Amino acid sequence: MSNTLAYLLDGKIYINLTNRCTNSCIFCLRNDKDDVCGKNMWLDSENFTAQDVINQFEEIRPSAKNNTEVTFCGYGEPLLKLDVLKEVAKYIKGKYPETKLRINTNGHANFVYKRNVCEELKDLIDTISVSLNGKSEEEYNELSKPSFKGAYDEVKKFIKASSDAGINTVATIVEGYKGRHLDIEACKKIAQNSGAALRVREWIENGYS
Image (tube, rainbow, N blue to C red):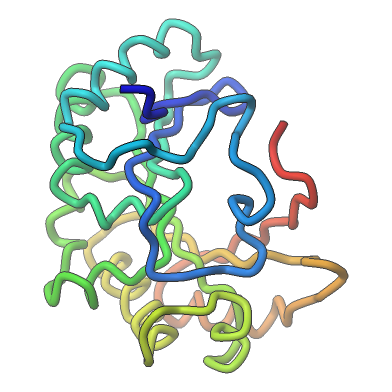
């Protein structure tokens, strides 16, 4: 299997669990390139096990410059592989308890699974970073192109659910996409009202190389 399930970016370990996503964000790196730091992010199969992920994680771990944090983030929505993610997280926390685990998510998981998955993650995940991507539903829909109606409200509810579960929660926006600027203060208030901090991510025109 040639799947890239674990990869290094700036010396840190990232885990790529799926190419499926409930958004089609106009600024997503995968729209413009196939790889991150030379590793192809497009999976040739999604039929893999948590052990496959763990094996790749262990293979690249000695090469990581920073083993203190592992992030679930790739060319898809990691929480669409919830069971695999939880099993991998349990392994890492069990063997390397000092390692902090983070998930970069679009915040649709509770809608997808029809339950509060944050309660299942609170003893495994240290930080959840949620893509807020706008101050309004109209702006969110334009930028994120979700596959279902009401997605923006689901994102805000997920941010609050994550915060309420006691997980360090960060809402994120992408600033500067092709010269477009968001209302950072308005987004910050939305994040704070849900118990989260706001992180502004600068758009990377050519992606990671």
